[in-house]
Amino acid sequence: MDGGPEENAPQASKAPKTFIKHETHWAADGSLLLQIGDTRFKVLKSRLVSESTWFAALIEQRSGIVPAEPFPDQDEIDRVLATVEEVDGLDLFYLDVDNYPNHLESFSLLLTSMSNAIDYIYSPPKLADTVLLLEAADFYRAQRYVDFCITYIVGLLPDRMPGGDPANRALLVKGVKLARRYPGLSLILRPAFYDLARLWPADDDDDDDDGQYDDLSVADDDDATVNGDAKRASALEKLESSDLVLLLDIQKRLVFAWNDIVDIMEYKCESALCHKHHVGRIHHIRRAMAFDPIRGIHMILASPPVFAKGHYCAESTPKIREMLRKERNRIWKDIHLWYVP
Ligand SMILES: [Zn+2]
Image (cartoon, rainbow, N blue to C red; front, side):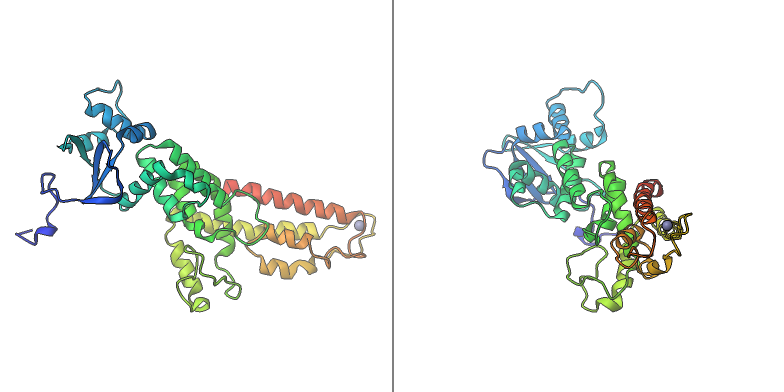
């Protein structure tokens, strides 16, 4: 404030322009210079213009063309236009922007994708990189790359009725947050909320300790069973409070769904051939799957003791099984209504 160290001073736009050439994106035949922080890129202007409507607007307006109607991000374009300098006959723009913490890495991934996306066929990007790429593609309005990221992320957590253990724990909390930010990802809300609901809190004895999960996981700690719940809780704290409230509500509804399952199991036909119902045979499944009635129904249907010969009669057995399948579909369908804020 009063003559403090120089590095604490806000960077003036006309400060000495030291820079580092980006180690990858420095094209000898590049026709445009861009800089984020002190990293400078030399890129093909034509490619950026053809892939990103944001850059198309920037370059068009730099050439003096006034848009017929303002570009949606006109403020951003104006701000960057004002930074332009000429260096060795090329335009240099400073792209720095507030509230974009991983801008450099994210933008660099976008450039990499523009030149090497074909490689993704053989080696898909990591989830963390895909999220960064999506951020840049969304910011710079590179729609093909937005579509790629959305398709890819949705594929990691498909909107299918769960038949087994949660498939992708790394994408649950993150998935909800991403879907709230990018409406194109709303397809992952249902599987993400269902898996969050059934995993939290999880039994501490069937934790997966294989260290793959970076979201709800206990991965970075050997002392998993002691700290698992605490870590899970802290991962969940990254959710918006409105989504945390929804999650608790979803859990409650899943627990209540068991009442309907019990009602079905208490079915007895009128012919008195069903001597008694066998709801007692599902208690252990209900206990273990309190927040997971869908998989609970899978287990009931697959459980030989429940539908053994001589339990329900031959006529009732298929009826009960059909009612259970319908109940399972109903729960899965209803979840759509439960996570709308
Ligand atoms: Zn019967």
